[in-house]
Image (cartoon, helix red, strand yellow):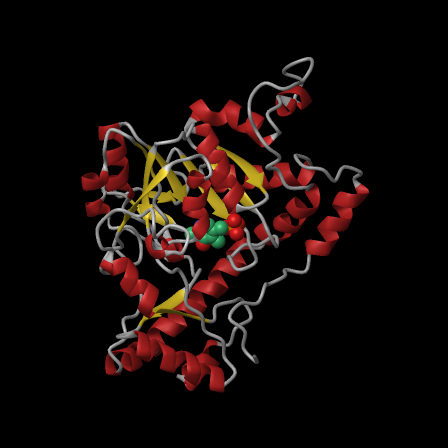
Length: 372
Ligand SMILES: *Cc1c(COP(=O)(O)O)cnc(C)c1O
């Protein structure tokens, strides 16, 4: 392919900082670069506490341990999402209650959530699809009313915001009790594989560190708060090495530039495709008034699965790779036999008709416009 779907962008400092991390003589986790990254996120986005993880999947698994997900608990989330959103909860025996997507956007339809809440419901997991906020005022109000946890799947949502009814702009990932981010190479800010858990509810701060460090109080020990460390709780090895954190730091230093370029690509697509979309009955992305755009993804919603296929083939003939994703999880080979629930027609519609166009820092968007 001449134009790939994604191309990881390097700022040029990644190897410099990795070399520095190696020379510092401590390359396991929770060192110099890890702390730089944590401080950066806590200060810039107002997350109460951050812990880097080896993936967003891991951050979600940490969240399930923190809120004590048990066999039989019910968790509400959209069906149109990545596998990890659900899998983290399934690992702990939860029953997933899938909600449909909005008609104007692939995110969870906030107005469908309340009817799905039962005595067994423990958490709501909104996914900020394409970095576009879910209506967090509605979701947090439901959580307060029914005493539920909210775990934001903010994998795609770095540097994006929710504008509340009070007019205040809050970073995605700072609103729910917990939030999970991804630095996988297909995201805006990358470290190959990588992720982060944002802990906004201070009740979880201490235990999160323990779960992160194999169930030990090693973090507190290194800070001199306890005089020996040992096994104090369940946990796993969720922390990345300093090599990964050093790579991530090189990216974070350039976040303003990276975001600016991606957002300008997004705007260019959106402006240039207006007429084409109208002529072909294609829907361009719609941003709810409470959401900002972080240039994570440019997608189109086709009028039919056939039209989508013909656009994919047309682009392929010009050596441009476009991709679609998310077979609705309730219809996936793994879950479809255990799914009991309504039709999720919007979710299925996005599965059939949504198409993602190439989006990466070094992209020349005009080439895709010409091809279309
Ligand atoms: C990318 C992604 C994940 C998984 O992230 P990893 O870092 O690869 O584990 C989870 N949820 C959503 C919505 C994603 O887009």
